[in-house]
Length: 225
Image (tube, rainbow, N blue to C red; front, side, top):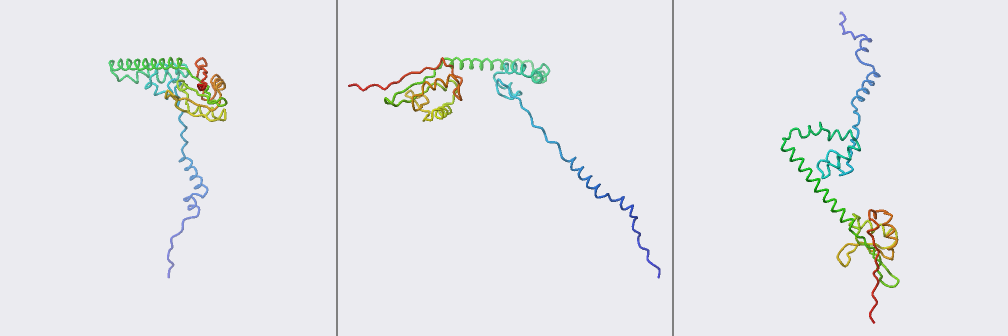
């Protein structure tokens, strides 16, 4: 009987050429993974206005746009041109009608004038305010010191009381005085020391003109005989 013809296997060289070597496959895989990895997105740097504290693109919604623009022009002329150059403004309001542009300008000027007037009034009130340091006699050997008027200079009374308590290692709290107004009461006669702290502007107790500070005495009345 004749032999059956069996299928001949492909030559070894051809098989080797058809299948990539293990090293080549691994190299291709690593390259593909490297291409798949994306570069991390760098963080966005936000610049804040030193006048209104808003991000630059939001200054127009505040009440001090004119001063914001003046500050930015001195600080960074490139960013100023980006937001307020003639081309930038035209691109922003180019779709508005002439009537709408005029109204926008008037509204902005009115808002700024109102904000300036409010700031001036607050400044005048602050300069006219007085901080009173009162030395109060409880007994011949016991005194407390009451400080009133700090809130007019935007000082947080609770933080100030905590600072004074730590400084003098004594009790200090925010209470209501006879007039129903908040004041800080510190245990002990520390009026001169408090005056010195205000003069130096230490910690949260800063921003008070020393000419606006006065020390007063509140001695205990003697009993009538």
